[in-house]
Length: 71
Image (cartoon, rainbow, N blue to C red; front, side):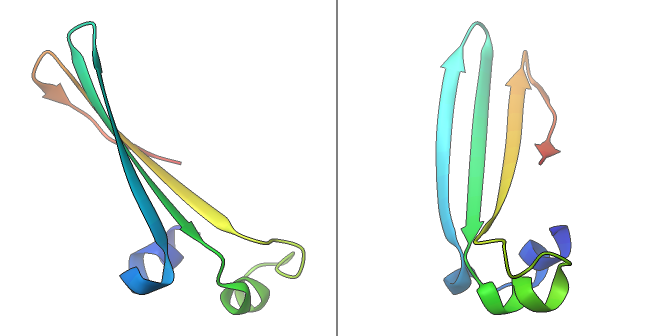
């Protein structure tokens, strides 16, 4: 699924960002959602039963140290 979000145009996905601050940390969460059923049918084994795909990126900053995780 990672390759889909790397190649898709921004118009094909819904996107939102959330900021959270507290306890000496700042975290940005980015959520991307696609309901591109044609791509799902062609590129996944269960494409006909999947209705959407989602990508969550979390970028926490704790005491000036940043990291990133994608799920």
